Length: 272
Image (cartoon, rainbow, N blue to C red):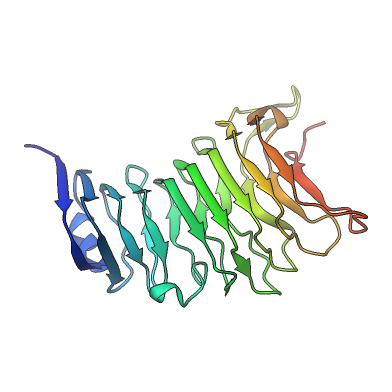
C-alpha cells in the first residue's frame, strides 16, 4: 500500500483542525506533503493534539496559528514548514505569544522563511523542545521578535534536554534586531544536555551528535542587561561537539559593564 501522499491546494482559505491528528496516533508513519500552488491561507483551529505517527510538511502557505501550536511527541514523527508565512491572529498577536511548535521527541524542520515579530512582546521561545531527534533551521530570517521584560526564555530555541541522539542544525539563518527578556541568561538559543555518562577514570563522555551552526549570523539583538547574559548558551556538551563555521555573532555593546557574552559553553560536570 502506498504510504506517501502529495496534496496540492489551489487558491482559497481553509481551516486546519489540530484534532485531525488523532487519526494518526497509531498510524504507520505516512508521508504527507501539502503544497499550495497559488495564494492559499490556513487558519489553525481546534484542540491541541500531538501530530501522531506521521511525517507531514506544509509548503508555500500563509498560516495563521491563532492562539494554538503544533506538538510532536514521537521519535519517528516529523513536521516541516517550507516557504510559509507564519503569524497569529492576522498579525495582531505576537508570533511568540505561545511557542509555534513543542518538540517532545521527533523532528522539526523550518526552511526558506522570513519570521517577523513586528516588535510585539511575546511570552515563550518560538520553539521549545525536549529530547528532539532533529531540529533543523535552514535559510531563515528572524527579525523584530520581542519577549516580555521579565521573561527568562530564549527568543528562538529552548532545548530542555538534548540527548545523544539529538541533532540540531542551524544553516543560513539570520537573526537580527530582536529583543530578549531582561531576565534571560541565554537570549537567542539555549540547549541543555544531561544524563551523559562520564567515565571518571578516563575522563571520557559518550559522544553526542554535534550541534552545527554554519553560514549564519546573530547580530544586533538586545540581550538582557544582567551579569553574564549571552546570545547562545550550551550546557553539558564538550566544545568538540559544537561546530561553528563561517558565522557571525555581534550583539554586545560597549562598554559591556555586565560582561555579556556572545557564546557560553558550560562543560559536563566531571570534565577537566
